[in-house]
Image (tube, rainbow, N blue to C red; front, side, top):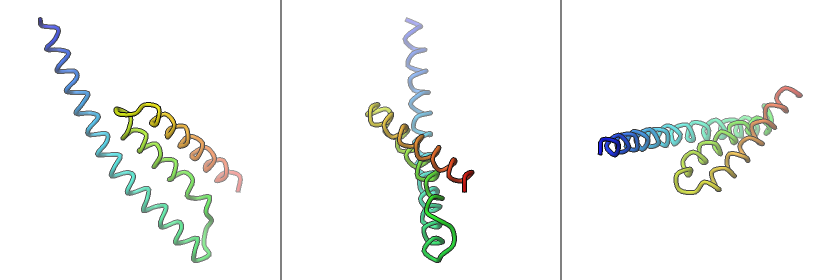
Length: 97
């Protein structure tokens, strides 16, 4: 009997941690969106280029993958894969140019 109460405590802790992670990623997604908008604005004024938005866009996909993870794992892994491609491409282009 004592074992079930420990399971409930662990499940409630995990649920609280997941909720906190979702809230943090929602805030981070808005920050990364603002960074993307700023970089597009600079690009429209002739400063910078559009490859600077790849890494923040990848981070947005990572956040979206974490937000949907408990409900849809396949979508979460797909978003994480897209994010990995975007972040790595952004980093390679940043070092190349």
